[in-house]
Image 1: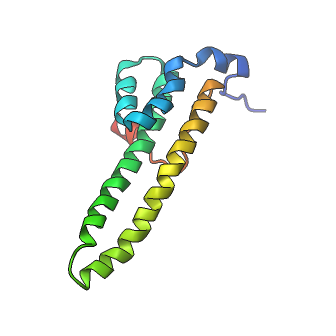
Image 2: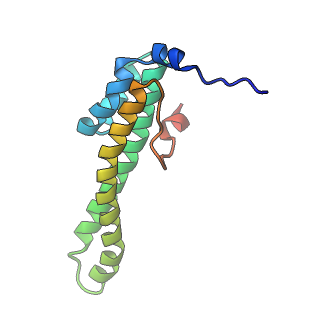
Length: 133
């Protein structure tokens, strides 16, 4: 039988930190900037892991926001360009609306998981911060 590297419930509670719990709520108000400051300033591994998860998610959301913003500007182009960009831009805007709602829900779930002592990765997130190390 293999030995698990995951700490038991009481060990997880000892390893958690207030910064690791609140970084997800901070990200709702500051996007990736607040968690990036927490990530840079903290030396607590639990806090840094939670901040890294929040940064990765919010960078993806910001990139999608920028793409949808640019596509919304192109919808005022003359015909047939407006139709072509509209067919691309409308699904992107819809995806952005869904991600906006998901961001709120994910922040609640991540905060809850952090309070119970585990660092929750947001679903479908690319580990951008891990690649920059």
